[in-house]
Length: 296
Image (cartoon, rainbow, N blue to C red; front, side, top):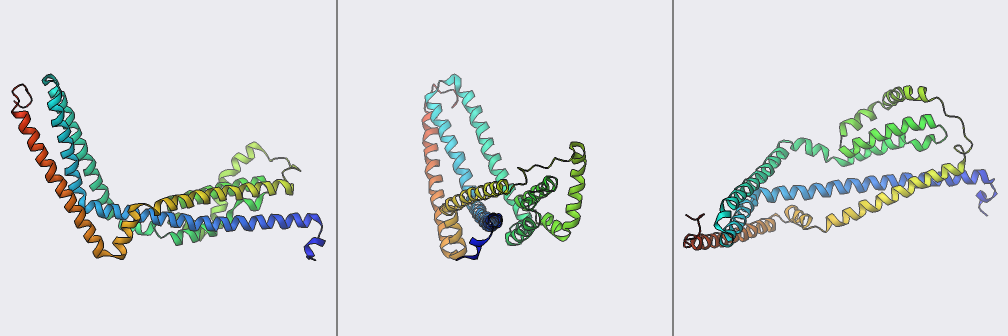
């Protein structure tokens, strides 16, 4: 017989609460691992897109401009001559937009290069995760279910910690971990004024009951499990993307990656050549039409 069966029901309920707390801690640790993994994978996808854009971006820009010009020339054959000026204005505006979009994309890529050190630091997710888990264990409000005033302070503290984790603010987490007592003391000061105005809450048998605490813990666990499921789904989708396959090729088989880039450039160059021929033919037909005032 299990000795726990001989314990009074009160102790058994406490045992149930402890099991729930253990499950919550395990869920948080697993969720932290998943968040780290998701951040890393998204970083890989962003990294390879920037590498490819640097190599073929100019070809894609030219293709977009050629497609736009082909559409414009084809419209010139269809619309009445009185609308030609309007069409030309629209074409000019769209051309300018494409050039501006690519210019901004190049600027973003250059900015990311200049911020390389900062980006590397942000991607040091294992360190961020370790600090976050340490602070969660230290400040989580579940430990203060029986003290509403204290629980409110710890909820505010955790909101700050979670926001720092979300922003990848490693310095903020390190600052808190370096002197947690001072951080907590400051948080209590910030909430003390509102607590004094509202007055101390009256003790409630319902609030202090084990049953309510168990329900709160179960809700916390359920919410964590939902978040875990969502992050797992996101990771699965990202891993199936061609960007990640290309990133793996870039890292593991650089020669094959270079061949893929060369093939991409060759295909884009062929498309550009084809479109330039199409434009040449369209311009010839428009010029040969005496009714077309735009050509004149």
